[in-house]
Length: 73
Image (cartoon, rainbow, N blue to C red; front, side):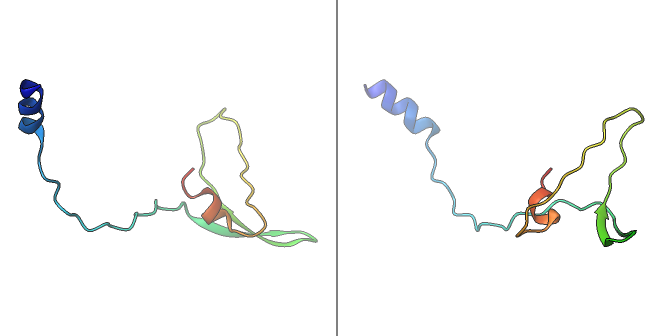
């Protein structure tokens, strides 16, 4: 038992207090406003992929913006 305790004490150190930092949000892609005939305007953020890659459309929920719903994707 004493051997285990001395091994534990060898690696034990007092943790220093560190002030929490707010998370840094990722950089968002450029945005633009597209005019949709008979519908008005649509806010678009687009990241082009490689030729032949599938197209992915992310729709946001009713109460939040797409930037809030999808910023980590």
